[in-house]
Length: 458
View (cartoon, rainbow, N blue to C red):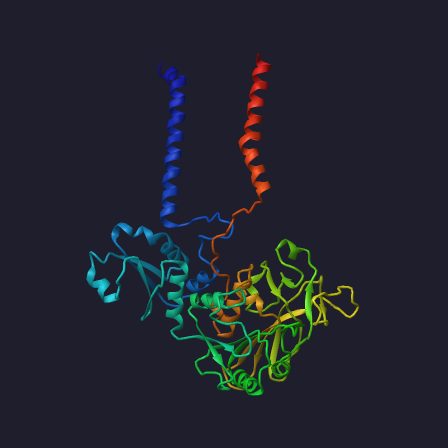
């Protein structure tokens, strides 16, 4: 009887079911143990919008001492910041996250100077700083301020037709200024015509596309600044002569660059690469997809950048400088010396064929220890203006350049990406076709298929 009972179908099924249940329970227990120990997530967005950026990872993983992020909020709202703060804690064992309810512990909130719920304070060693917002930019900015503990000012030269720092129009630099603010740089305009001396608080000097000639005292001030250990970014457009829009040749400034090993060609690069049309740019925009080996561009592999109305340059080392190429135009580009005609003859035998160097970075040996001068020269200026700064990798390149010039190499990386705009713009005819398809064509096909099946079965 016992053997028959054991062999009974119901008994076997019960044994199988029990075994399966035990296996499932064991798997669930193990999964929960692993989930409790290892906090892992997967970001399925195409631009990894909800993952911490390489910049943040580089800073947090490079911490040499313990860091604490204290989040002040009501206990019922700790979840508002927990997901983001846990990502920081998962990057490094040196990061600890604490939660404080100001209602339950008002003394701690008062001592920290917290006045609003939802505030995060980052403490690294003896230094503390409050995050400007409960976003990655805000919290990482607090890390940067704790680590740097110094004011860094980017000075933009004005007075000779340069792009304006506070201009929010297409050719202004207001978005560049906002990007610098997020990386905790201060920025201001300086006029070297009024006083031919770079202010002592300038960490980096930017010459952003002057349309008029710099006077010799201005150039001498820039020369003294860089050769004394200063840092400068030069964005110089081709000297176009198109009617009322003329760009000065700026010989005094280009002669200074030539003495440092960068010779600016008086030409205009035309890019015949068909990929540019797919990216929505014309032949006047030099499209760059490959880069040299230099800290500014090392992390930009696989990203495209665009340079409207650019010029080429020749580079070489000198007895005082070491110059590296950052990137070239594409192999399908060409350079024309005809800068006074709106129409370009691409078949002109005088045209030089690409690739052509568009940007270079150099160092100047001052003879003093840990006091080298640095400079970056780019043969275009509109690439950093409001109308083009958000083109693919342009914003990253602009900030990487400032980071390298300011000796903030640890900040060089790809920044957090804004949400992608995936709206579809359609004409009235296209909208009508979509409406007819969704409201009549597809439902009609389903109805006809149903009638056909019914008829066949009948």
